[in-house]
Length: 114
Image (cartoon, rainbow, N blue to C red):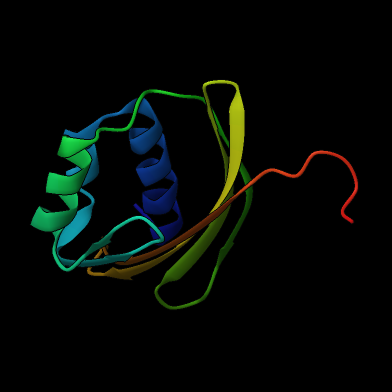
């Protein structure tokens, strides 16, 4: 799989709630940084997900950008309980595994910006 395909697969598995499949995409030295969680290893990240697992939910990729080397940036919409959230994730790769994830999110705006 290409880095782009790995990032897309990560989102698919996350939104299916498939933690076993998700874990197989991650380097053991994963670094994860987000507003609600930071993890310094795959084990720590997976522990946090198992404690509060993702619920299967629809999602939509809005934009995906990749560089020539080892990063893929994805803007996607996560839909849950009638709410939608814009999520931005920057994935970095080493040897076809995700080694770093930076996550940011914000509720979707309804109507024109003020």
